[in-house]
Image (cartoon, rainbow, N blue to C red; front, side):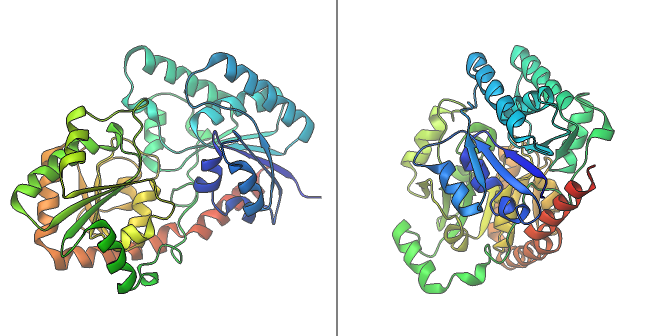
Length: 383
């Protein structure tokens, strides 16, 4: 009889995106159950069908909602007592806190939590104190913590969230690795690129791309400042923004939004289901984020043979080696971003060579099945 594992995320998009394919892989070795908020349009049910696992909906919010959080803990506790899992493994901050508390009360033997970034890094004052406390509770209830980047280990230890013996990075980092047969520039021919460029009104332009949430923490304010300066020197250049705003959680400056809306060389696509076609028509990734876990966007763009300009933060500086397969710049430095974008634009041959090295690096270090097998080995090592 297979041992039972319950994998938990706050929202179903994380189960389907963050862990895509991993639940199905693990179900060959364990009985796997997925838990998250129900989502809309039957999102959790879609995960169940695609991954071939059972799922349970538990409403969890991404904000601080004490009453709803207590209800969620109680419902998770009931599931754990009924299902008696060998392992509860959580991802995302809120799911981690709620499920680790519930799993400890339910006496689940192995309570695992993956850290994929620390929002508290940018918090200050009372909010920082609260987030620090919640983090310590999560780690205290867990039996093992898996930071998905080596740089996160240092941050966790510097903040005294837990002891070093509780921490382990799986494989070379990343929560799920990357499928380089899926993110492959060879899958996109010239005709498909011409069609998409025509749709977006891109001609013989150099294209910088950003993919992700259009929020302050991702460095979008700095990116727009840098690109505006680039536009003063180079005319045939575009900035392609692929992602959605979060006006309530982390709004951009009003002047940033105004420039995005009025600069004809900035193209904002909103949410897209498949980012690969957009990477295929781009020349370089700009990703000036303030904080990350182990960013999928940077792995994806590297697999698509794009040179990347990233900030010197954990995850980013583990995927990109400065002046080898991309460029690493200081955080919150629009001038450094501008200068690096200028250099990339002025050195097209070097840019292409770095892009090819970026794909090679990802294949060797972060191929998806290597991460899955390392996680499987970890599960099998637990008694």
